[in-house]
Length: 253
Length: 253
DNA sequence: GAGTGGTCTAGACCACACT
DNA sequence: GTGTGGTCTAGACCACTCG
Image 1 (cartoon, rainbow over the protein chains, first blue to last red):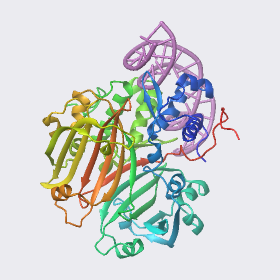
Image 2 (image 1 turned 90 degrees about the vertical axis):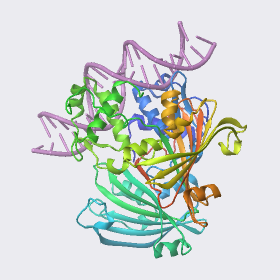
Image 3 (image 1 turned 120 degrees about the vertical axis):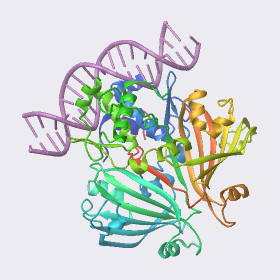
Image 4 (image 1 turned 45 degrees about the vertical axis):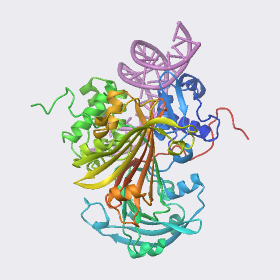
């Protein structure tokens, strides 16, 4: 399913060894040179594999010392980012259940779609309730646009939509924007999540795109405030601060 | 301040040109080959620069076509991730004001530090109120551990602690874990943010680390629910799913 | 000084998109 | 076919850490 190139295989192999404590927390991985021998590749390929693990927060590379296996995995494995509920459920062992409330083919009105979209689009609407330990925790509303998403069987919605889109429809899911706010629920949400009449709800709205930048999904997830937890691992990025262009070409005075 | 290597300079230059509309949204950047000529570097160096922009969500690389400038910058410039309030303020033009409520040197009790830390540590405690358009929006509580943070003048706290740590103390801020929940505020928070007695508050707690994995900061930010918005850009990562190690060595059945 | 990661190069071959 | 990005290589030099 994923790519079968060397750097990904190596990254997955090392990640798996970290997960299984073959490489232990607070110890160093073999040096890049040793990994070259181990996997029979060039150093740049090893480095690209390690970069993936670094980005995920599995390791920290320290110049002159080595690549240290970090401790954060426990609570940061793959949350945040763009991950499906089923994947979360699996990695966290949450013992959750999904109940489909609605699933229908409709025409999605522009207001439900990005501000930029002008005309309405056909697609699927799915409303699902997620129960954790038998109590309602999340209500998901998904709009799946039909130019890329041509079919959506009920079994896929009950299992994992992402899994279906990637493996059955062969879509190349690439990135998403996500926005978290706290707001007043509508009646459906309030009842489904069993919230008090003056209660608030955490709304996570996202737009998801394919590798060719096609928008294929708009989601709103409503979480009970007392069940909501969002965990993130972030690296410091220093790209956007300073402001003068390089010596190159345009924008002179 | 940042690194002075080619790939970073190129990334910053291109980011700046995107910001200034020299490279426009929904158009393609010059090809990697052209960028090689433009900057006089090898292609791998160009690619590493583009990878940074890709990771930030500024561009989308499409095989066979080119690197498309994305549209998302408007609302996703550098939020999320690990960014200081001052940086946010600057990039978003929020017109915000910081008021210092407390700043003192103390001994930080273990309970305020990571579960793993056992003994108490000396450090600074700072409590700051952030006003946006003259109304209280966020209360920040920062613990700065004194092994790395040796001094903390009041002017730094009023301006930007990150700026001070990076530029004056020369610390190499690298990564953070972050957790968002919704909870009942304590009295101080409720009063400072002017919340109703039964109201909720959004809590963002984070642990920040240096490049050598030293913990240097523990923060809790309390946001008024009606002012809170968290925006994120995320790329789909596919590293941690499958589970069999490579042909390499250990873990046989 | 020996070992580590950080950066960079100049090639190579591939897969994909467009025409 | 031409041009694009995706992957990979085998080297090089540097900066850092640690003994």
